[in-house]
Length: 322
Image 1 (spheres, rainbow, N blue to C red):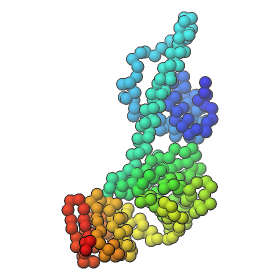
Image 2 (cartoon, rainbow, N blue to C red):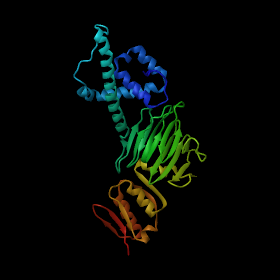
Image 3 (cartoon, helix red, strand yellow):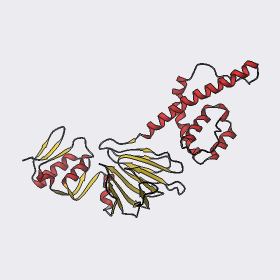
């Protein structure tokens, strides 16, 4: 039989053991719980998360629990009872453990997907460690479960991270096949259109593609790390106010190719702007625009460059194919 207090390296064991503590009566003695919580640093967090999910699932579990009363009388009352009792307890413990752990795992996975925004939406969330994250339009992330670390996986979109300081537990953002490693700092990670950008605002971060990445890059405040899907990483220093203007609902452009400007604006609306003709595609645009007003943006382009604009409920079309 596996000792629930034996140190393990599998990150799933802490959650499994926490579930066992809640389900199996013989592990709920105060001294056992105290010993288990102090045996490994990740156990406290695992138990807290599992307890919260257990409370949320209480009604579900109660409705699915077997109607048979669980035997609680001392063993050895009868000879045959002394044989059947451990078997019954073992069978029920296994059943209850599998039921609860399956439900907890399902709930944990779905909760981890809850950090997301719709097109045109922004959202501020506070992670369990106190880190504040501002999610930009059409973005999604979930928590990483790595022992000794904090962090998230940014599966798509853009986010501003204001990381709570914890020197013993680095904060890691996984995005676009790379890892952004920080302690207490603030930075932007953008995982859009198969291109990864990391813009450091304060503090320091390291960006790499794994522990043995010889091209790992340490950023200083104001630096931007950029890498396309199949390209090499590059460093530059953009205007921080411009690349973080989306937090104020603004899009700042500085001689930006018009196709790129339109693609950026289209991230904020389900009514896309469509450029037609080489004339429109070859132009550049500068200015400050409201991210949630794509129609005014399109009308401004048309007025500046003398391009026709066609508008309906499905799209805004600028220029002509002739």
